[in-house]
Image 1 (cartoon, rainbow, N blue to C red):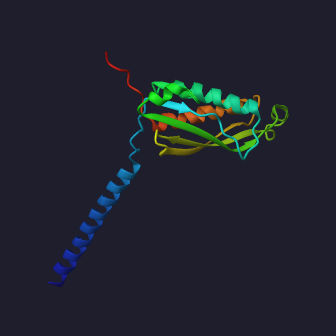
Image 2 (image 1 turned 30 degrees about the vertical axis):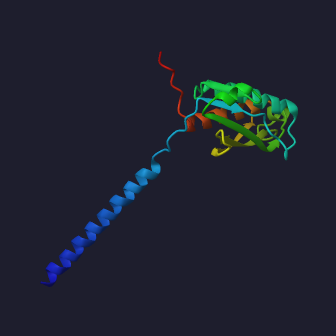
Image 3 (image 1 turned 180 degrees about the horizontal axis):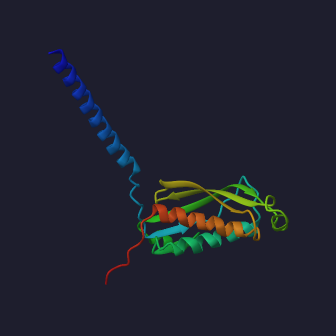
Length: 179
């Protein structure tokens, strides 16, 4: 009698553990599921903001132009609007991208060529994607840098590639309208 009771307790414990592991693995599978991609037909890219960090104008302008170009290449939006474009207001599901510079270190191309450990240029930027009502849809911090070879402005291009990666990862591609 004692053996039967011990075996039933053992099997109950094994069943409970198996059930618990099943729930845990199901919860883990749900946690690993990527979030539903955001959808929008248009994005307006605001001018690069650099209030707390001194950023040379050539970097600011280069960053802005590269971001517009690289976000356009993602094919995630039917329309990519510049800051101040009045046509953007007519887009029903407009997303606005604000880039706020939070860190900047201007290196030296000469130092990078002489030594591979000094002279790096780096730019750190906080990205905010908002909807038409100003609700934040997504926030992310990205970095652009030049560590080895290349001119300092190359960091702005590398930064824009990072922004494009964030867009690709979080926004669904636009589907062409059927005629």
